[in-house]
Length: 143
Image: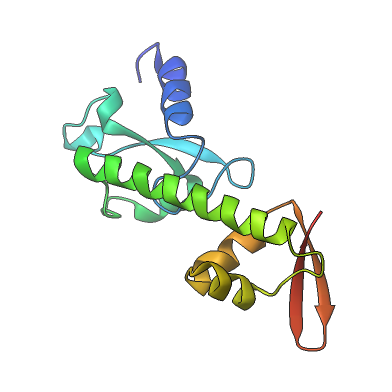
């Protein structure tokens, strides 16, 4: 590693919004590292376009194998997808703000036209929500 590694590491983490580019998990929920798209052993460099943010599990788990590391055009597409996820999260929160009784994940997904799994991921990771259990359902309330 060169002497500017810590500065370069900060630039990469900040560029990637402190989010693992493989699985989407964010700090502070996971510890993040900077990964080389093409390993230095395979001739990769410490250039900014060869570095990506990865959580420890993804970085260690991939070992020498590829996890579908994005090329530059794929990376831009992934960032666009991440923006869409942020918009989805905001839509879910706005829906819950206007639902004083709360709603189940299925109700939210149907009302907004989103995939149930994506809504569940948003609901399970948001610190702004409170869960209320009724019979066999879990209702989410905006706090």
